Amino acid sequence: MEISLTVNGEKHTVDVPPNTLLVYLLREVLNLTGTHIGCDTSSCGACTVIMNGKAVKSCTVFAFQADGAEIITVEGLAKNGELHPVQEGFMEKHGLQCGFCTPGMLVLAYELVNTEEDLSEEKLRKALKGNLCRCTGYQKIVEAIQYAKEKV
Amino acid sequence: MIPATFECYRPKTVDEALSLISQYKDEAKVLAGGQSLIPMMKLRFARYPVIIDIGGLDELRFIKEEDGKIKIGALTKHREVEKSELISSKIPVLSYCASEIADIQVRNMGTIGGSLAHADPSADFPPVMLVLEADVVAKSQNGERTISVKDLFVSVFETSLKEDELLTEVQIPIPDNNMKFGYKKFPHPATGFAVVNCAVGLKMNGNTVEDIRVAFGGMTTSPYRDYELEEKLKGKELNDSLIEEVSDSIGEGKDIISDYYADADYRKHVAKTFFKRLANELRGS
Ligand SMILES: Cc1cc2nc3c(=O)[nH]c(=O)nc-3n(C[C@H](O)[C@H](O)[C@H](O)COP(=O)(O)OP(=O)(O)OC[C@H]3O[C@@H](n4cnc5c(N)ncnc54)[C@H](O)[C@@H]3O)c2cc1C
Ligand code: FES
Ligand code: FES
Image (cartoon, rainbow over all chains, first blue to last red; front, side, top):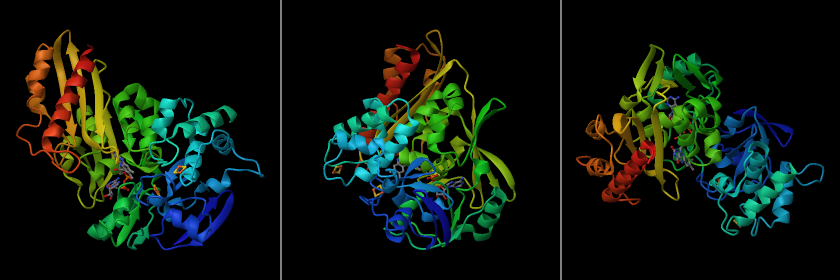
């Protein structure tokens, strides 16, 4: 199937079998390996990307569902060598340890700081339900996203 | 994990989708948000020669008020239901229910029509739709019919929709201002799906129950309205001892699910507790 999509501002037209998942298109066809595969069963959120402004789990989206879409992956957050506030927040507040969950966390945080008004700790913990982190205990992630919200 | 391969069609209009569905019949499966179907296809619990992706049918993506009803297009995302100001002002329990589904990413893709058509006995929408007395519109090449949600769920992953029908719309009568609604779910900590969930609508006249609606999910193979329980309360003065007394019958005589999440006694206990808490919250004590 022929699919056209914009990834991090760059237009791509690719020919992939219909059963290709978006995460494989990104990682294996476009070589954007920043998007991780953790569980591959829709649970962990490591594969989160932005599709038309909304965070989605790219292991649970067929590539053809992204035909015509604008995708932002973790590689697309920094602009002209400048970190996005969410990246700065994770750095300043130590929002990561091993870093495996981080691409998904950053991308979800990107949607949250852009669209949510109330990022109280309670709201944030509920919003992070689909992103698992086995290292940080989430406290630092919550602080990192709140830091970023102040900056955007 | 890679799903088995298939042929894929991406209709642009409802008519085109209906013609593909009637052409391929049981060889084809409709894909909406894919948040239930794709996981099943990846695990190879399901494989289909033909996938008809209806995700592009923007004509089925709307939330509007018409004829005293809130009408929601089948392809409206859970997150759109959660965030809709129209819904939160007219039917707040529905906004809350949508916000309890899965996580943001799943809610950004999953659709209301997909959730109802999927008929998972542990899904969030069904008990709430049952107490709101919602209808769904089913469309095929032969025409259109309306199905009451109470007649929609047949069994696990099974509905009364026919093979050639598409669920196009959900219609919810805007409830009487004096009827208060509540929803509770006990989510399984890993999947987020309800082990048991319960929705109640209660209309009081002083201390007397003028009208009551109670529905449970996660208990049997289909979510259900507990009409017997409702009858025991209508016209009665609502007090602690009556609530306690009637709640004893919850789940009695039904084939309650027992699985590795929870056995039948545990489910009944959670259902009773939810009913009692909701009855108390809604009567205002
Ligand atoms: C990690 C995860 C957690 C989840 N947790 C919850 C939860 O807590 N509570 C909950 O309620 N749900 C939960 N879900 C399920 C989610 O709500 C799905 O979005 C929903 O069940 C199906 O909607 P969909 O649009 O994704 O449908 P799809 O997956 O595309 O389709 C599901 C089924 O419905 C059929 N179908 C879809 N649309 C139509 C239509 N218009 N007409 C006829 N048939 C149709 C399809 O053919 C298929 O059989 C979860 C899913 C995931 C991945
Ligand atoms: S890899 Fe997609 S949710 Fe875990
Ligand atoms: S930092 Fe290791 S999983 Fe989150």
